[in-house]
Image (cartoon, rainbow, N blue to C red; front, side, top):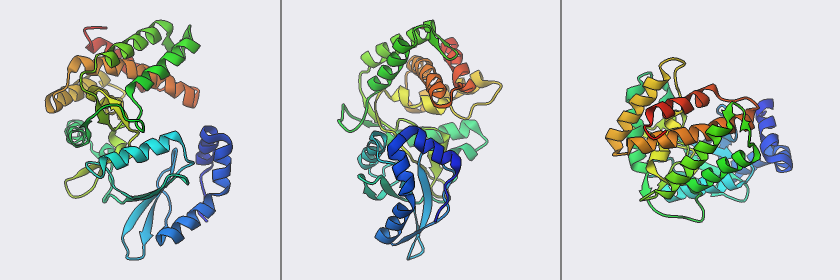
Amino acid sequence: MIPLPNRFRQTILSIHKEKGEEWLNNFNHLIDECEKRWQIKVMAPFALSYNFVAPALRRDGTEVVVKLTPPSEEFHTEVSALQLYNGHGIVKIVDVDPQKGILILERLLPGNTLADLENDEEATYIASKVMKKLWIPGSACSQIPTSEQREKSLLKIYEENPIGFGPVTKEILQEATEVFMELNRTIIQPYFLHGDLHHYNILMSGSNSWTAIDPKGLVGDREYDVIQFLLNKLPNDHMSKVIENRIDIFTKELGLDKERICLWGFAHAVLSTCWSVQDHSHYSEAFYQAIHVFRKQSPSL
């Protein structure tokens, strides 16, 4: 029996409601099934957030990673994205059961996250190399959401909160919604994107190799896919300088449009701030401060 932390259990119940309760009640049976079906021994999990993720030992002594979650649209999108990338720059699927929410993945070793690097410039250069591998020119795909759906998410928040939401004023909500619409309208070449690429979703997979994990899957502008990285692991002071340096590296290394990065950054920072209020009943200070950082760096705002 693998004990689950109360905080993780509450997260599952909060997100998945009755399906989450059923999943939790059946959790140990699910572990037993995985161990018998794939001939593995599931070990103590990694730090848990929204999914159960743990290393597992095969009979031959090699390791894999078991990822379990109540089946959802987000889970199916992740599977579709992993299958689309097929191990190119991203963790490989060993096996999957979509109906039961089971993913068996390769174990990346040593597995340190990019967040462990103290040199922010070095980390940003590494991230740019991973992005180069991941971005695939493409168009709408029924299994992968688009950045227009992010736009609709913000529009819904704006329409339901006409006087503002959390620390975000109605004027900023309206402006961010308009920026989202304009940017989506002017995408010249859409790409298949990771959708949630930040320091904690890039792992060391060898002596000098780095690999992405946990894709959300998205179709949209390449400039949009760097925003989550820009919003993560920010210092309390000099935030503006760190974001500016990261943007300069991405612009140079990936041939991106700096102004579009700043505009996407502004719009998505507003959306992320709103999401943080929805998820935690209080807002992320870093996301909120980033709104104003991107605004100052964009000549169009």
